[in-house]
Image 1 (cartoon, helix red, strand yellow):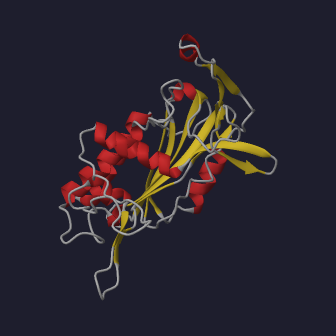
Image 2 (cartoon, rainbow, N blue to C red):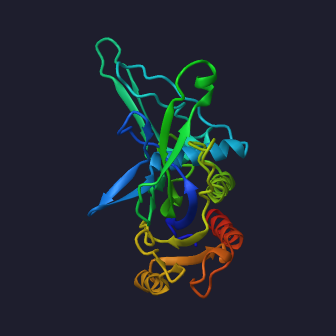
Image 3 (cartoon, rainbow, N blue to C red):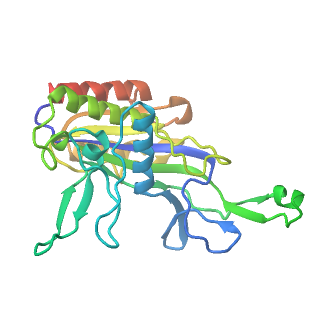
Length: 294
């Protein structure tokens, strides 16, 4: 396991009724969701930045102290964090970029840590059908105003996303004066996996509560850095395309050090033979992480 460089996880989550990630309004009284166009159809998605925010929030729920935001010191500069990956887990896992204004007679400076946790958007595999939720604000009527009619785009479908963790960059390199102890590196990765297992976004949840935690996962420890399952997990026959998964595993047999498939079995009927429960799959990944950093 020591020769591995990355842990990649592709996951599926079915959503029965949701409005997951807002977009710019196309009309004054319609709240849109983010969508990507393939040929002539549109498919809803949750942006990678929203997924990252959700993972950060879950780490805070779990008791991890997060790096506080800091205003930019240059004109039109973007806000950043404390930029202290030794102290803050989110600066370590998700990276940062900061800029410092120039002193007289000197050039400005910048600091950067590239995120060792790579995240894809969570994209629906089912197209948007044009569904809208109709609503009115009757509080306005009671106050003597108009009922304020509005609509919200909603969607039901199966969503797919991928995460890749560069294990050899956790707790070290950019931003670190001294590498973290291996047990803390392992603890950070396992806390991240727990946050991912319980993935939940707080956006648009007041009226459209949804569960986007993984219900199927295909995970592998690799000696390379490649999200091998990202395009290879597709729905078929009430589950997933097992033949495509097997072909992917065969193609990367020399790069895969270990693999596991996990599923909420009541939701899927067609799965790889060695599929275990979601809980067992995450326990297996915890074991990999401990072995890697041992």
